[in-house]
Amino acid sequence: MEGLLAFITAVCGKIQVVSDLFWDFPTNFEWYANIPILGNFSLAIILLIGSGIYFTIRLRFIQVRKFKHGIEVLKNSKAQTGITPLASFFLSTAMRVGPGNILGVTGAVSVGGPGALLWMWISAFFGMATAFVESTLSQIFKEKKDDEYIGGMAFYGRRLLKNSAIVGVILSLMYIVYAILCFPAQGFNTVSAMGQIASIISGTELPTTHAIYWIGFAIVIIATCAVSFGGTKKISKVTDVLVPIMATVYVLTVIILIVINFTRIPWFFYAVFTEAFKPEAVFGGAFGIALMQGVKRGLMSNEAGQGTITMPAAASDAAHPCDQGCVQAIGVFLDTIVICTLTGFVVIMGRVWLTDASVAWFDLGKLPKYLASVAELTPGTAFNSFVTLLISLCFGLFAFTCLLGFMSFSEICANRISRSKVFINVIRVIDIAVICFGMLTSIVGMDLGALWDLSDFANILIAYCNIPLLYIGFKYVKRAQEHFEKEDNTPFTSKVVGVDVPVWDEKANQK
Image 1 (cartoon, rainbow, N blue to C red):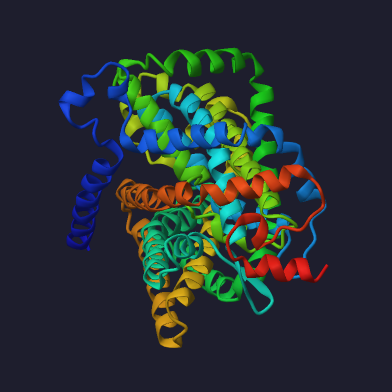
Image 2 (image 1 turned 90 degrees about the horizontal axis):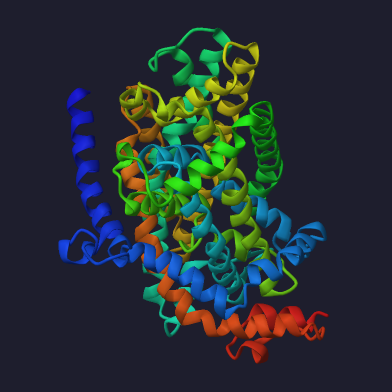
C-alpha cells in the first residue's frame, strides 16, 4: 500500500508541475517577474479577471443593475419543459458551493494571508459578469431532449465553431476529464466528513481505518449512483432539498460565531485590506502570492469562467436567455461574496495562523485547520462541539452535492459523444472507480494536498478552453442583452440573435 501511495503522490506531483505552469506562466520567467506591477499578474489571472472586467464594462455592470431582476426570476420560477430557474440555481449552487468554500478559503489564507480574501472578492465581482455571459450563451444554444433541456459549453462551443461535431466531442471529453480529476478530492472530502462527524458524536478520534469509514464509503457510492443516474430532473429534486438546508445551516452557524466574537470584526477588515498588498513574510511576503491564491481559490469555489455551471444553466426553462444569466450571476455572489466571506471571518478572526504554532498550522489538514479556527472562537464551551458537528455535516453535504453534479453532467457529455450504452456504462464505471479511489485515499490516510493538485489543474485547463468561446459568442450575448433590456414583450427568436435557435423559435410559436 505504501508503494501505491508513493506512486500516486509522484504522479500528482508531476501534474502539479504542469498545473503550476498553466497558473504561473509567464511569472515563472525572471524577465517578466521583474516588470513592476505587471510581473505579479500571470496569464491565468489576466484572462480570468481581465475577461470579467471586459464583460462588466461591455454589459454596463449588468451584475449590479439586474441583480434585483435575478431575485425576481428566482421568486417567480415556473417551467413547462425541463426545470425551473430556481431548480437550476439550486443545481448549479450544489456544484459551486462545495468543500472549496471551506478548504479553498482556508488554503488561500494559509498560503496567501488574509489579503487573499480581498482578491477573491474582486475576482468574484467581475466573475459575476463572466457567469452571466456563459449562462446566457448556454441558454441561447440549448437543445431539447424529450422533456428536458440540455446544453452548456460543449453545445455552444460546437455551434460557435462552425457547428463542428468534433469540437462538441472534444469539449465533452474535456468536461469528463475535468470531472474525473475533481472526483478524488470530493470523494476524499465526503468520507472524511462522515468520519469527522462520527468522531464528534463518539467523543473519540476514530482512525481512518475504522469501520465507520467503510460504511460511509458504501453509503456514498450507493447514494451517488442511485441519484445521479436518474437524469437532471431527479438530481434537481435532491438538490432542491439539500442546497437550501446546507447553505442555511452553514450561514446561520457562522453568523452566530461572528456575532459572539463581534469585537474582532474591525480587526478582520484591517487584516484583509492591509495584507492584500503587503502580506507578512510567513506567507511569502509577496503581493503576487496573495493575488494568485485569491483568484485560484475563488475559481475553485465559484467556477465563473470555467463553463462547468453552463449545463445546469441550460437545463432551465427560462423566459429569456438573460434571465438565467442574471440568476447565475447571483450564484457567484452567494458562493463567494456571502459563503466564502463567512468562512474567511472564521479563519481570520480565529487567528490560529498568528500563533507560535504557525508551522503546525501549515502541516494540518485543511478541514482541521478550519475547525481549529472554530475552536478559537468558542473556547472551552460545549457550543464548540455542536458547531463543529454542524460545520462537518455541511462540509460533507457540500462534497456530496458536488459529486452528484459532476456525475450527472459527465453523463450528459458522454451522451453528446455517443448514445452507445456500452460507452455510457464505461464512463459511469470510470467515474465510480475514481470516486472510490478518492475515498480510499482518505481511508488509508493519504494527504488531501496531492488530490488538490488534480483539481487545480482541471480548473485552469477547462477555463482556458471556455473563455475563448465566450469572446467568440459574446456578440450573441450582447444582442440578447439589448433585446432583454428593451422590455418590449417581443419573444426571443432566431431573428433577434442572428443565428438559428430552434428551441426559442418553438417557444415563441407556442405563445
